[in-house]
Length: 71
Image 1 (cartoon, rainbow, N blue to C red):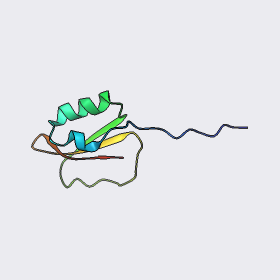
Image 2 (image 1 turned 180 degrees about the vertical axis):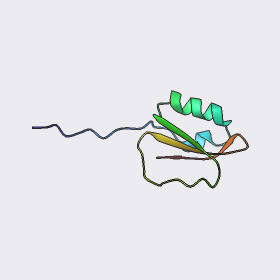
Image 3 (image 1 turned 135 degrees about the horizontal axis):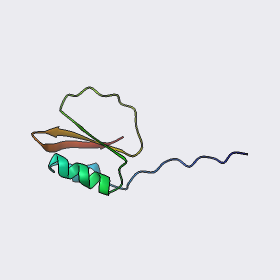
């Protein structure tokens, strides 16, 4: 009998801690904290809204993170 898969986990980290940081610094910090995928987007970028465990998203304006969210 196959075992029941364990759902993936993500870091216990608040997206709010990245707002205001320089984009490169925020990306490095997110990876150090265990995020497997880090995505930086320009304001207004069209993206799909599927939730991906382990992904941190940044909206970047003028080189700084203005918004951050999981998934």
